[in-house]
Length: 382
Image 1 (cartoon, rainbow, N blue to C red):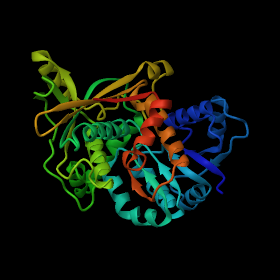
Image 2 (cartoon, rainbow, N blue to C red):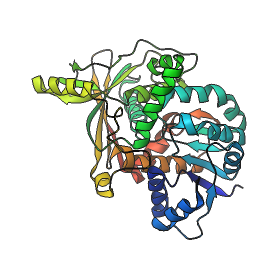
Image 3 (cartoon, one colour):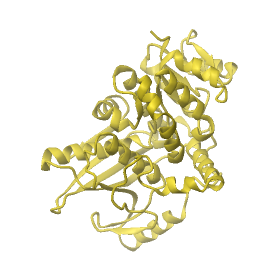
Image 4 (cartoon, rainbow, N blue to C red):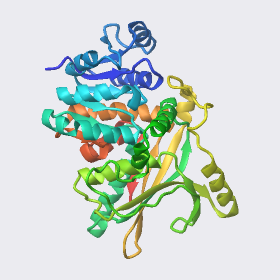
């Protein structure tokens, strides 16, 4: 029997604190907060109204022994300490070695592939269930495609070989951690050109399998299916890889010929074309104007945020059907903090084989139902 169900590692950071606040509100039974600085942990515990006896644990991301001790005490480590390629490798190794569950917010595909190569076999041996990308990237997209394909099999007896993911509306910002991860990835690619191949390969997270050619989605285009202009979506590079990994890990229920892309809806006519071209020139993660790691929007801004995602399934005979995913908070903070918290709780309450997973492949409809019941997401298809 381990001491805790969940340890929130990085609880003094902005997103980590939101997760801790959520667990206080939800009454998580056996959990602890962890980070580098005991004084800051005490301050957060007091500020969020957590019980005075809530355990606080100190561990630095570059101290493998401390991280292993942390992992040995809990069923699941929930970590918001990124960029993960800078601060996450030793923690993944510790969890894989000790059979400990792990969830993060990673959107760094090259690092994820390196972790798969390094620790998949060990995690399978120990029973550690390691789950990357448990926030806005990539749960709504991963489970949105899963929902659509469940509908396709029920309606047509087979999956849709072509699915389009389209961001219709999104109110709210990306997190400071996401921006920092983007910059760290660019720096890593400059040092190691092989990383560029992983970043551009849609099947970078499916070792040993490569499917058909996938749309690149780097230029604005007119989408005849929706009769509207669409623009590049900055998170498509990670989401599409996770969707393909879910298909791969589940034994290709979407088919080995599955084609998937993600873009943002820009609008109709000439105004839509102009908007798509403007979006294509804008990289919201490449400048320093957004929040820094540890910073974020106010509660009012988080609560007023939302998103609406459309998934279009196209069958060989021309039939079309849709799935929609909506979230009731801003994607980068409010919704993400609820999603990762509920993923960790779902991991505690379910069983499964060890390995390095996506949320959709390991937890699937169980997590989807939980997010609908508790985290403000809605999934519809038809």
